[in-house]
Image 1 (cartoon, one colour):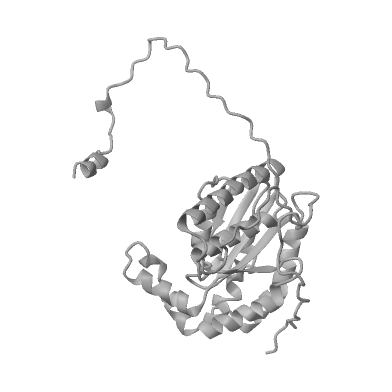
Image 2: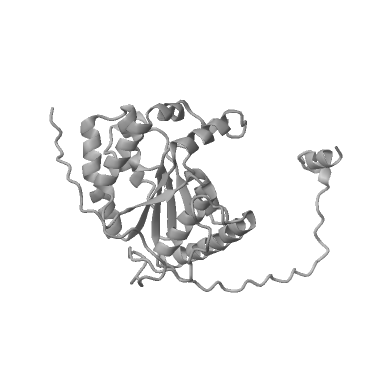
Length: 314
């Protein structure tokens, strides 16, 4: 049966990315970037990180995280809606970058959407439907740790969707994203690119690490054997969904630290946020003690054992 969708390759965008301060946006729904502060990357942002010491990395990460707090205040104040998509191969560094982004942010404003495999009911829905439920409301940021692009990657490679479903996705995805953008959502799509050698090294490091073994699944092991299949699927995905209005931005991630700095820096530089004055907070004076309150005896409460004292005592 022939596919119902004749896929056309969209016109390739001419720019390689955004830089801070290139333009001013007219409102929170604009895709045009303009960073509020100078976010020029310092020397040492290269993939090998040979020029950036640990102290420099931590200092720059803290600077960018401080800017993320400023971005969060702007999102709340303006009612902006932001969607950030994290895609890439297993062990490419997506989760670690998300962790650094959210470290100092409020989960009530910035939340992570990491959807499990679809249920039977969800498989009977329009493919994008279960993702729509996780889109942000006014004043929210949603970080998709993998997204609707599962259909273009793992589902295509592992045979979890039919050829027609895959073709339909590639046909519909640009239009779906265009609707989000036209409705005022700021959409950013990042592909974390890791080499086969580095990916295998990271997989091996998880084998004997009890804290990270859970990250290594049978699907990860199968992805090693199907490296070229994933590469072809990624190339086809880019050909149809890397559009002028909704471009993909590639994050070289053989160095996790470089990837984190580069991705966060680019995200900040691409959003037209500005500093929202934070009213000073003054702690109130304690009320005058009346002498009429008596705290109940501690023995009336169930207190957790003092494990810390046992550790300190050897």
